[in-house]
Length: 578
Ligand SMILES: Nc1ncnc2c1ncn2[C@@H]1O[C@H](COP(=O)(O)OP(=O)(O)O)[C@@H](O)[C@H]1O
Ligand SMILES: [Mg+2]
Image (cartoon, rainbow, N blue to C red):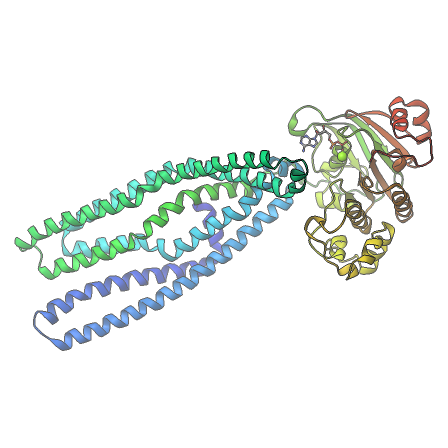
């Protein structure tokens, strides 16, 4: 935990040092003010010297003012440092998350990444702010008090030291014990988050299927579990504050007792003893910080560990560029590629094909036959278990990841719509894509029909997740995004499934014209989508059943014939099962 904080605090060294300096000033001034009561007592009250009383009081007042200024400066510094560190931390986590490959992302899971990036960060933020602002005081107060009280009476000071030591030992022990339940609590929050997201996103289906009762019960169970774990964790630290206060109060009683003995035997004077108790009172008031420390420390230890897990994660897909392809024509070769998710059962096996530059290659096969997996491998979201993939003659593992992905424009099966304007949804930050380009691409994919109905054309806002457009309209928007990019290879993973046949035919035709001369990979379940392709690859259970043109396959491949017949091509265009 300390190493993470140190890493982030280093950048704000000056502010942190200033914070510490003003915290120390605060403690010294406070101790000084307290010690001046003795001056008033001995030199003022005892001998009835009014000017001494007045002068000392004025000095005390000035010191208190200076203390106030120190508090303000220290607070400002601590707020500044905390805000900057939180910003940096969140930025690093965000960068890391977006750089994760599909594989690594799914190994974590979206929900836990979300809680780590938000609630775990705010745990750290809260802790850091309070630590810099007040907890940092505690060690200085302790050291200052030990020195100040030791000068009065070593014996009484020893009692204080024992009390401090006991309190701190007890705190450390209890905090340590509560780390495992807090860890469990964060994981249960992750699970709760998964369910919450599922329920909110699927609210409509849940209602439609009349599963509200069932889903609510499922949610309640996880929610209750989370409450139990949280109570269990809190239970471990309940006793801390009372025990700390009991120790300190017992110490006070002992000090009273021994103090009175020392007074009688004239080891200390009455004014010394009064001063001593002033110090003890000051200390007990700063003990009020302990509940806070104890409550947050275990939580923050867990949160820091969870964040480190993300930040220090070693990615499975390693960017290790060795060769840059000498040409840019979009040639793709798969050689005996085998792959299984999580190293488990092979999802695809022995995939070999060659896509010549400028041609269209299509993949067809049942759901789950491994079509999308092949596209992910091409885009290097995963690496094959065995075999090689070449783009423009270079193994994709030897190419710079960014460079590889900039060669490939990928329209994924899962349509992505950002909560932003239509133009930004298409350009995605690529400044080379002008508004005219974006408009032209909307024309090609017939998203223009939708644009015409929106109030602000390209500047119209899309709702989160594209809630204000239909499934087919979303596909047209993501198609427009894919073709707007200037790439060598265009991948369309099942991106026509939600279009009606007539629209699909028109969109496909205009996309074909726009992408003439580029390498295109088309994934589909409908034969109508891919029948014109130069090469059609039929997948069955992760293996290539056959490849060839529509005519060849129809004549020789039983799997293809079956698909063809199931889609009823008696009438031209036919009906599709998209
Ligand atoms: N992230 C994943 N983790 C584990 N298995 C997966 C994952 N994605 C897909 N699969 C499995 O891989 C197989 C092929 O999936 P996919 O390539 O998406 O098929 P298709 O695109 O042809 O419908 C399926 O059996 C699916 O269950
Ligand atoms: Mg798929």
